Image (cartoon, rainbow, N blue to C red; front, side, top):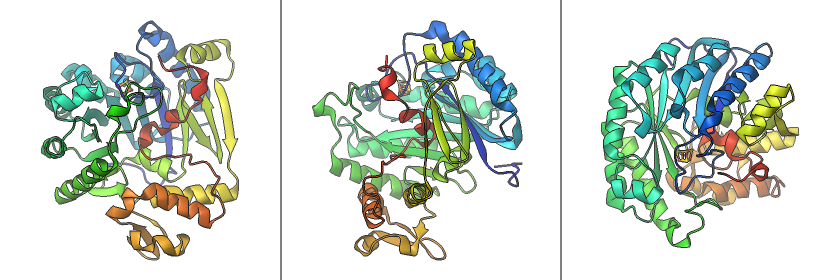
Length: 391
Ligand code: SF4
């Protein structure tokens, strides 16, 4: 990104905002709809945690406020956390936003705080599909949000899209892609709808996506986005040249990052650790000076190597040519000197190819730590789910 200091090692900070106005039908994230009275204490606790960790953290090359719904919180409270962090020159600072809560003033406040990237939860540009997903915004709000982002002078914009709802026709999806392209974001994240257990969608078999329909929609996305000049750099992510999300890249490259807030994951020096899942427990830990860490793991060299291959397999950079067994070679194509990556049809079978990779390395039982997508929020998706059921 412009002005970024690429001589520094990449280091990211993720701050989790676990509040929403309403739970979408497919959502299994660590977020709550009935605890807005905690917002002040929670953000003060995140600020305190940032203060406590600051001395031990290198300059952040990326900061990501994710959720939940970060733009439910007063911008100044995000700014208080940001002010405690040492930022590298040109650091990428992203706030994830829901279109129904975006205002021009909010975007101007973000800009004044140093936010330079907005990730907008669009999901669909068809009202009936948004209803079927349990979303509260409408497509007009998306256009207004994008205008507000641009008028505030925030240069970088990601649109999150979700395909695969049973209520979504191929024509709906095509229109969503076309409308999203017309809005000219520099980045698009395109996720397949996943029926997570315990969600309204997951519990209703009649609303589970159809595999063939999902495949058709992925192929259409790849065709239209490539045709519009976006480059696929990870299986669910497309960007204009130079607009790849630095924060996401950290996760895919096994980089180092610190998580702030409840349910946030951190990775430092090969050790992963994660915080207590609920905002109440996080606030209580910080206020008493106790550690908010709920668990940790350390990967051995072999596990790290396999994980690196699994992650690289999902990217356009690909994996070393000899890393994959012969029986998946027909799903691969050249990706630069000595490397192969999945073809577009191979991407449809990415999980199977990853299994073959693990089988060929004798690691079939190793857990798939980085499932598929939502990289920016991945650290909270795999948090200690048993700690407290989603509200
Ligand atoms: S999908 Fe996003 S907006 Fe909807 S409940 Fe989950 S975190 Fe909140």
